[in-house]
Image 1 (cartoon, rainbow, N blue to C red):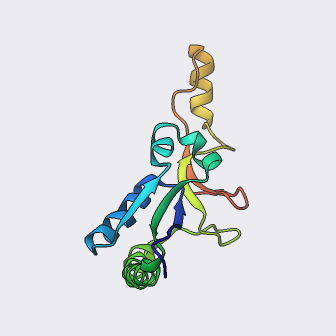
Image 2: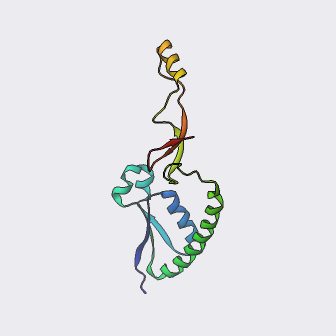
Image 3: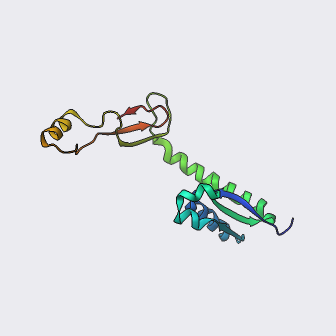
Length: 139
């Protein structure tokens, strides 16, 4: 193999790219990031430039693969322990769910009445879980 520099992986999250870069540098593997400044200073341009690119020597690819696979297995085990209490949608079973302001029944009846009487914008909104796959909202 030659000393050719290649793009090993592309990241759309500069923090993740720096974490992987730090792991490689700890293992004494030469690497550098390109387009990192664009991704951190102007995040909207990140996709246009193709993300943050991790550049390595072609001769180090097999070593990097082995190193990162070992680390990813450890991370996957930690994620399984953390994800034991994941909220799933009652309707479709999706895990693409988050907690936040309601979109359908945003205000309760008493907030609406008080807002009309005081001629102000409603001051308290309901919160619930929202499924991004089917749009179902639940508590």
